[in-house]
Image (tube, helix red, strand yellow):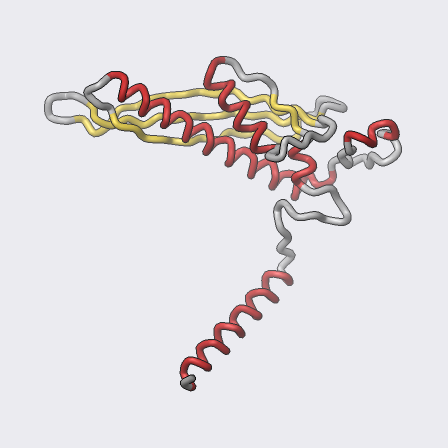
Length: 196
């Protein structure tokens, strides 16, 4: 092995060690990891009840949120409610010379409010937006299929962004929320709950 190759490998290893020590020293902690002093963000996420959302797009959004908040279908005692309102808008672009649009943007905006069930206190609120494009084709069926696919992508994007925002909330200011009880331990629910 040449000296240059050994030097590159050793310097790469040194850089990796320095990066690991810097990351561990700056207070970095995994978003979904366990923390011995507070419940993990995932336990809080599993305890969120997604309220019904009107219309078909609302059903799709609610299903995506429920799968995202509790991917293993493991439900904790529901300590929080999230209300979501959706707004969908379509704008055409890429207009040809004959005034026919060939491309469209579907914009999906979700406004949300997270409340604690115990006292109906609003904990977090905000808005998430996703823009997804699709082609406008000569066939009406093909255009409708493209629009539906675009809507599904936008719903998944909004759901993932919203899940990440909620996880960040529960790792930051929401970390002081009361401990989430396991479903089997609900009979002694009052003894382990810490007040924020």
